[in-house]
Image 1 (cartoon, rainbow, N blue to C red):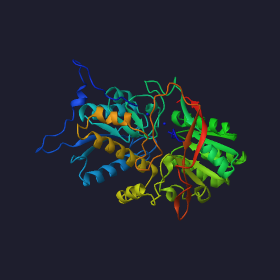
Image 2: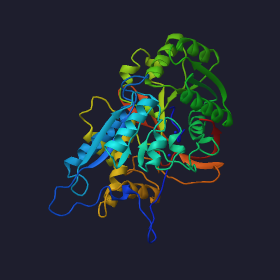
Image 3: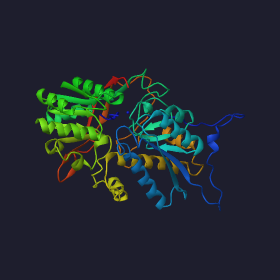
Image 4: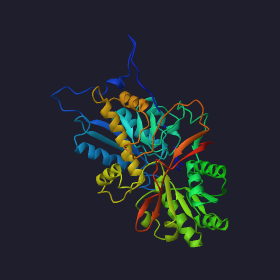
Length: 423
């Protein structure tokens, strides 16, 4: 499902002012540097739940990808001769910690923008929006990117974003992934496994509704977030005859589910996971479950990070070759940093301000980060669309080959209904 991960976006264009009006102070925070003076760096912030209940490396991919992009950018001279200075903050996966990070980066460090935000609890989102700081390419773990202006999630949004999630508190997503597996793999019975945690459970409800709308027989399994019993869930989905398994779990949870599936002899056509688990660590994460490992499929809205035949992916991989692992979230963090850079370059002649960067994103058409993303758009629709043509990126894990793309994401598209759910 394209729009929301397991774990889902915002705008204001500064217009000319009439005589006697007063512009926000943020418009003057970053004037062009006079000739002969050293150019001040452009400061951006990255908030990541590095330490959180789901583990130390669960959310670091977007941050690492964004930092790699900025390192390469600075090595090449930066933006109009100005280097990008990255200020990072670990919010600890808590709302309190997130608010502290937002306060420090917005009010003390005075960052021009946030990039690749990946927060388990984005409690500071309203404060970021109120300060008119553009948040670019964040991961929609919660509903913030479909709620507030000035927040631009990596997958886009059609919602009004006036302070209430989606439309009257309802978010919407398509069923293109389920249609793909029904048509391409002939699947008919699907299981959905989630945690009893709000974001996970909400996403699982949407998955189950979408599967039913596409005509699947659906089996739902929910495990405790703190003490999950994956073996019981695996035994039940085997008994129910599931040939397709979806999840709203993190990497560790997926690995434990797969291990349990192999242990009870549950063989499926496809074990479908989300973009967070689209990583190079599959051999280690799933070392105890070879059958399930080779049934892993991942879907998302960005080009497979192993598709080095594409020049933008090749550049990403070359710049990140020093990293010990690779992931789809790293690629999306890289794309978020590219997005900010394109905005900053457009603003450089008059000044890289919060307002100018925000205006670039507001006015810009569909964005693809050089082909790394399916076209990302933002609109303020008064009513949610009933149907939408959506595309999907699909890859399958194969031992010895890694993640293998299944067709081209720009042509794997379907006209599908949009279903509502409560975040």
